[in-house]
Length: 60
Image (tube, rainbow, N blue to C red; front, side):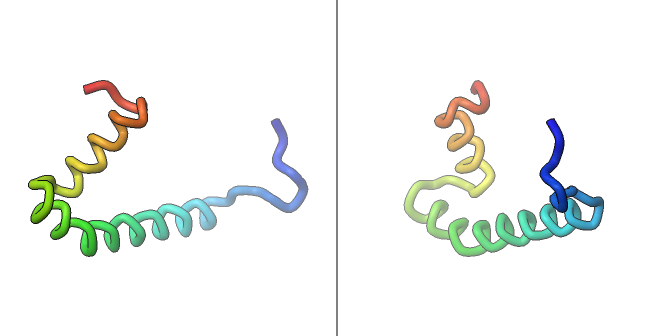
């Protein structure tokens, strides 16, 4: 499959994408982590793992 003209993933674009994802996950951890711990006794990483299992992406 070819990329449409003008839409090419460069190394710089990939780095920007991953930096943005890292920032998003860090912000989610900062803001959701305390609530998950307080209300459900879960750490953020455990929440993500359980979410992936629930979505069928991973097996326990």
